[in-house]
Length: 175
Image (cartoon, rainbow, N blue to C red; front, side):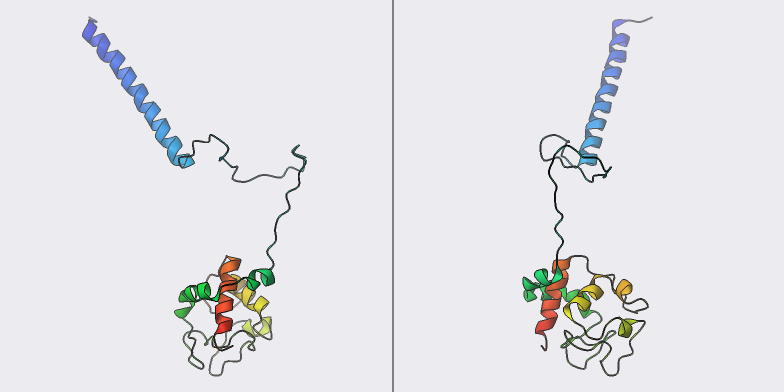
């Protein structure tokens, strides 16, 4: 009933199945870990859960909190000009030329809600008196969080350096 050819086919089938499982595991590992393989010193933990216990390293790592004034001092208006493309859909830089949003000519230092002929929304006129650096930074980071009820549909700009560059560019327009 079992001859040599049948036994060879059965053993070959098991070896082929084992090879498929090994290759499948290798592919899954590569996809899951992005080619790192989890080996070597380059492998970093994605996050750490603080349990309140000392981890035995004896070193405290201080988090660097970025101060906007410090970041703004090193801002590049040229980079901010490129970032203005997202604003260009609704805002114009020409004095008095409103779009969907008010014009941004000389906006840095201008009184909030002061553009003639533009109907401001929500609490925008209640959040600040003038568009200073900190006010623009807060508004650009999260418009709806900074001024609830605003009609501005922009979701915000997460990177503090991008916000500083954009504000530096806006400061150079009509300033």
